Length: 305
Image (cartoon, rainbow, N blue to C red; front, side, top):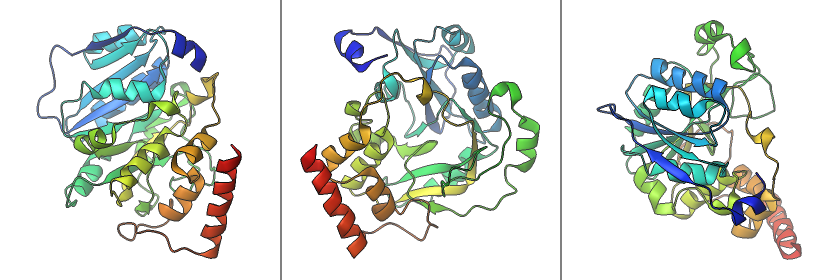
């Protein structure tokens, strides 16, 4: 939906608790979904059969008029639902109100959880000295986009209809992948207390573009320096099956720049060192000539906006 339409109409939002909650859960997994039933089914199924631990699964349904609402009801999951598409930021913040565990996981509905994805994330959590961390699983993608954080190109299908699950399960852990710096995107896990400290996802980035680096920047501002991608924790990513449906796309790179005084690209490259091999907690970047040049350009763009 257009942002102007959202601002002039108040959508009805409802919260639903399952009647038989899962006991002894480790993560609260938040999954926003927008009329994406085939992918949502595949995603939830993978979480239920490939997780080492029990988890609370929470779905936010934007509209849910493709059968998603009826399906989630039958599955007896915790969920929230809005009559219209309120976007990812509002959806995540609404779904968070249903969370019962100490750790929040953001999972996209176009992802398939590989076996023990949660085990390796929790092994990393157990090493942490405080709640100031942000961890991501590593995505396996069918196309190579040059993203150093993912394993590509390993094509196991672009849709549940042509998904080769058997081949994925046989091969998902055959490619070596080191832990990496600069995680910003799902699947990611963050302590609930830390999420609440920074106020969740910022609604000024609705419907959701650039909300990930904005959330990470808020974590950076409160002192988080451990943004780690875990190489052994893996998911298959069908690749952006919801964002392409958006009719409204704001000038979000400029919005990030205006808010923080630095572009998302400069933040990812110089501060988070995204995609480089993990070598410990991050520190402030060295003020090289290249970084100073980028910062000057950022400030000029900000003044001209």
